[in-house]
Image 1: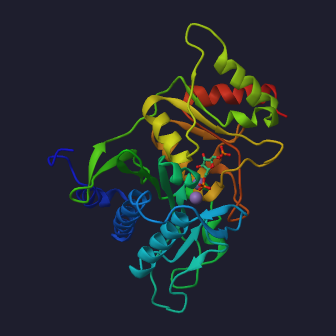
Image 2: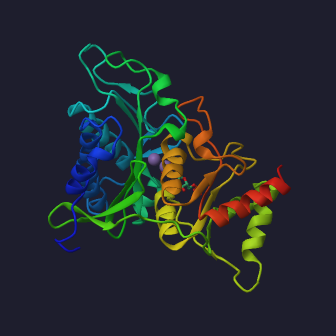
Image 3: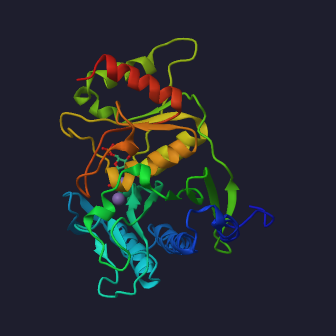
Length: 336
Ligand code: AHG
Ligand code: MN
Ligand code: MN
């Protein structure tokens, strides 16, 4: 990465004026995420060296094994944001309930809440495959200075003011949007600086990659089964290529660069799909749309779903517009 490239810090400063009601608060928030990302990145890179891999012996609210790094990443993001007094509330995939910050301080003026999946794709850690962090930021809807409530977190995705992810891959990247396109920054680990490497990222309108856990094929709705068969058909431009890492951030990142569609549909085992609306689907949908892609549950826009629970799950189909629309076509013909 050339030192002539813009750094993330410079980019944040230069773009502060594009935020609505800009006071520097959102810039500070993104700066804090940048810091936490570097700390977690350091730890993820140590995973093979020190005894931090493997289950922490605990399960999260959804009954899944928590990996040690999940717990670590969760702690780092929560502590970094709490200590800097930057948000008024945090909800995390790894916490049963949201965390309220400075609830007793009437002078507490923070306006933003953040929702995070601190470590996405964590089953990939102990096999040295890319993992990520996903974040989603909203303005609170309850009065500034009062303790946050669930209402502040249960907002439709179309109310997000910023969203993004960090991918701890062959290189570490921070990719985010504040509603003015998507920009990607690559970490130079030698000096600990993120540089703007992928300005104005754009989803190709079409692609030839489909990403789905095909092991669940027999449990999928008819429309999804038919779409998968369509992907495999031999025509001039098919069969498509199947690529599935099992880490949403990584699958999404690849598809955004190369063109493709990611599907986590409902199944008989998971009638609402598996991915969480607030920590995974909404931020990914915001990024997809900002990059010119699309994200739906097969029938309607992800960002228009009214959340009812913090840990709610929804089916998701996201990626290149033409590919997502093709899936929707199959879903409307075979809705069950
Ligand atoms: P997390 O590690 O945060 O629980 O998320 C895992 C998610 C997502 O990253 C991935 O795409 C999906 O689960 C994989 O699920 P399957 O193993 O069922 O395919
Ligand atoms: Mn996840
Ligand atoms: Mn996770």
